[in-house]
Structures are given as structure tokens and as C-alpha cells.
Length: 137
Length: 137
Image (cartoon, rainbow over all chains, first blue to last red; front, side, top):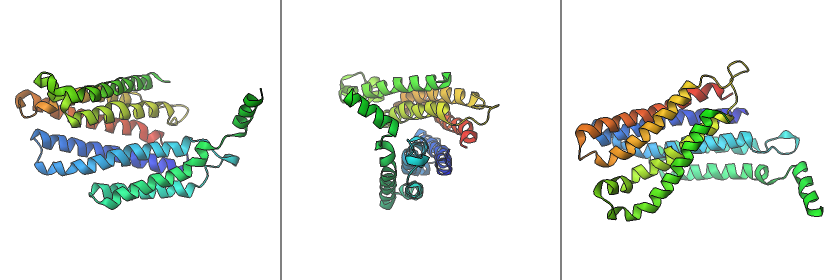
């Protein structure tokens, strides 16, 4: 597994634990057992679970598993590094209820899309050969 | 695919169908008896049916299957955290869905069950992280 995927997946597991803790906190507040101040964990719970955990886990696994380009390379890895940086700063912003958090998360996903596009759309020589033999056969 | 992954993926598909069915039924909740209407009409319940029942379980199941093994001897590591995580989700989520709408009506029985479901859902995330962490390499 590439180093950037290791970093992304470990961060996503960290966010999973933090996010479920905040979610349980809001449930305690809702039940009346926990102090009402725990309600304030609702917005961070949402941002952390949606983007810190699920999105970051999915993108990190995709960076690892999408088909590689010629020479076994994963393409522009700096774009995925930018994805991780923007996403994690964005999640902090979202947790604070800031609009810039949402903007950074959107930029992170855009950066990943630019990185992944050639890996997801370019056909390997074997696939091209199979396609041409289907057309001419 | 290992048995634990099959369990998670099968359960996630069940919850996907259930989420879609609840989504179709929600507009008609007012025509049903009060208790059914309260469960069907709960928006947090609907969101978590999708986010935990479907998406989280799908991620957990596929991750158990596809993440790298720890090493040749330990392979995927001990299975008990994943089995326990599965039990926690599939006990905690239904209990949460069935108790949340009645928190302010029958607190003697409902609140302890609701708090227990919060603990179970928290534990499911922690157990998955404990299992997955050494496999991120």
C-alpha cells in the first residue's frame, strides 16, 4: 500500500473513532443523561463522519487500488497529497461550522478527481487489444 | 470472500433495501398508527439507517476482505473484533431506531435502551479501528 494511502486510511480511522464518540455524545444529550452542551457536537459529528471518515477512507483506498498508468506509476501523486491536506483542514473547518471548510472539502474532491481521471479512464494495452479484436472480430 | 465480509455485505444490502422502503413509506407515515408513524417519520433514524446500516457496514465488510494481511503468519489478525463490531451494529442500530422517537414518552424503559444503543454503535467503530489499524501497512 502506498505511503499516502496509509496516511489517509489511518487518519480516516482516527476520525471514525472521534466521530462516533461525538455521535454518542449527542445521543446522551438527547436522552437527557448528558449535559445539553453535548448537542454542539452534532455539526462536527456530521462533518467528521461524512468527510473525515467515509470520504477519506474511500479516496485513500481508491488511490491505492485504481489501475496504474504506464510504467506502474500512479500519476500525479502531488494531487492526492493536496487532496489529503485540503480534506483534513476542511474537516476541521466544517467542525467549527465555517463555510471555508466546505470549500476546502470541495477543492479536495476536485483535486482527487483530476488525479484519478486518467487512471479510471485510460485503457491498458491488453484492454485496448481486447477491444480492437471485438470490433474487428 | 471471507465469511465475516459476507455477513457485513449481506446485512448492508438488507439495510439498503430497508432504507429505500422507508424512504418510499415516509410521506405516508401520517396515515399509519402513531407508533409506526413516529419510527418512520424520524429523520435521524432514516439518515442512520442509510449511513450505518448500508454504507458503514459495506465499508467494514469490504475492508475486512481487501485490506492487506498483517503478515504471512497472522494473516488478517484476530476475527473477534470484527464479529463483535457486527453484533454491536446489528443490535445497536435497530434499538436506536426503535427507541429514539419515544425518548420523551416512556423514559423508564426507553432511555436506558437508547443509551445502550449509543454505546454499542460507538463500540462498533472502535472495534473496527482496532482490527484494521495493524493491517494498514
